Length: 212
Ligand SMILES: O=C(O)CCC(=O)C(=O)O
Ligand SMILES: [Fe+2]
Image (tube, rainbow, N blue to C red; front, side, top):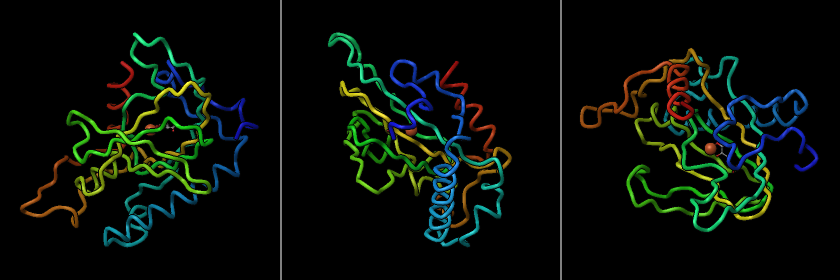
């Protein structure tokens, strides 16, 4: 991964400034493979939800543009002990459908293992990178589609004092896709928890709350 070093966005304190999409033109093969793997995963999720395997294609979620690759570099600063830790990434859930993540194996990524992710105290577990495997996050849009059957994963990157690289492929629904509770995920006793929303509007609001 280090040979792509010049393309990486720099994390640490500046993480919250990282909004722009990474330039993937120099990484077409990686982008193509990640996109194909994410599309396959999403068709498996559809089957798991007892939907047609191309359900998310049919609702326009995978119309172009969908998804982007972010390359991240964390310098590994620890900060002084009397300060808040300098998070590589503070606690957040990804906004889209699913994220495929590959890291260089350096520790730091943690996931909140509580079912109610915003309830305190949170319990965090280290997420190891298993060689040859993706780390998969469920995103907020999938949480809304499935009425919380699939929860979006709250995660963060802790500083370890070691430099770290990662690549995250975010499979986000097309901005014009309307995300609304799936029929198979609600009933009279379990009504939809979220109103229908245009994916692009959800993203705009999340970015506003995060960066304003
Ligand atoms: O670098 C990592 O391991 C996680 C990155 C991440 O959570 C993100 O970019 O949303
Ligand atoms: Fe994330």
